[in-house]
Image 1: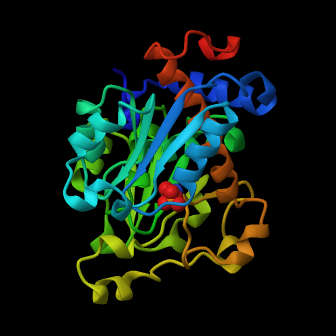
Image 2 (image 1 turned 90 degrees about the vertical axis):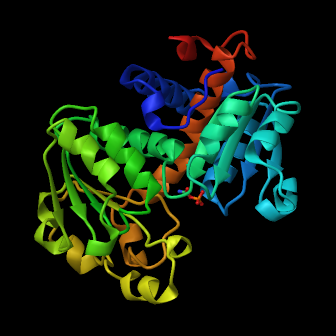
Amino acid sequence: MRSVIDILDLSTEELSELIKTAEDIIANPEKYQEVCRHKKLATLFFEPSTRTRLSFEAAMYELGGNVLSVSSAGSSSAAKGESVADTAKTVSCYADIIAMRHPKEGAAYVAAQNAGVPVINAGDGGHLHPTQTLADLLTIWREKGRFTGLTIGLCGDLKFGRTVHSLIAAMSRYEGNRFVLISPEELKVPSYVKNILKEQNIPYEQTEDLMSVIGDLDILYMTRVQRERFFNEEDYLRLKDSYILTPEKMNEAKADLAVMHPLPRVNEISVAIDKDPRACYFKQVLNGKYMRMALILKLLYEAGTLKELPERSRA
Ligand code: CP
């Protein structure tokens, strides 16, 4: 049973096909509106979410399917001590596909090992968030028209930022990209992520100073300092406002910079930047829905749950 736990579970060819499907959905939504009729998606969210859960649910509704939802750990039998494995086995009796978010790293993998239906990792602790990366990739594609030869700045909480870890893994597979990792010392990328770059001789630099590099960047991927992952409040308060992107700082950036952010935003991008044509973060939100539609179709088709797909998606 094919599940997607890590963005590297999808080949670059498959990513290209998902992007083509998403663009076909954007161009021809009516072609897809009954494809998942009588099929069910279970969204199991044991950690808070606005975009990921609602975009998965909107995706399934726009494909003509139905949704079963657990929107908090407290509202399911996880609160009584039920294991992730038993939850996955149980929900497989009711749903054709599962999207799961969990505070523990590796939880989606355990779910996939035990489920009888495809499982999509919708974020596991500070580890990975592959469907946010699908949203990010469609955004980069639509803004830049390529995945190669880009200078990509990632800024903020690079230690706990699972979207950063998945995006670095994804963009490392394309030629000629350079990474600029901008964070306080305490929030640097974990070594297992840095090793992806080292092992492939991909150029990268680490700095604490956003303004010293902002003018070099094609993409600036801002992230929130994640209060929920800190062991003590004091450290969070000290680091939370390490980077605040303002219109003045944007004056130093390229005219075609793409400013991205997985959201939610707290303080790290001034709302004044929302009107700047270089701000792409709300485009990412919408792109996430289309890529999740494309992924649901792909996994249900590969599982044999869907017998046929609109022509483009089968390519
Ligand atoms: N980007 C993202 O994962 O947002 P949510 O936490 O709101 O789902």
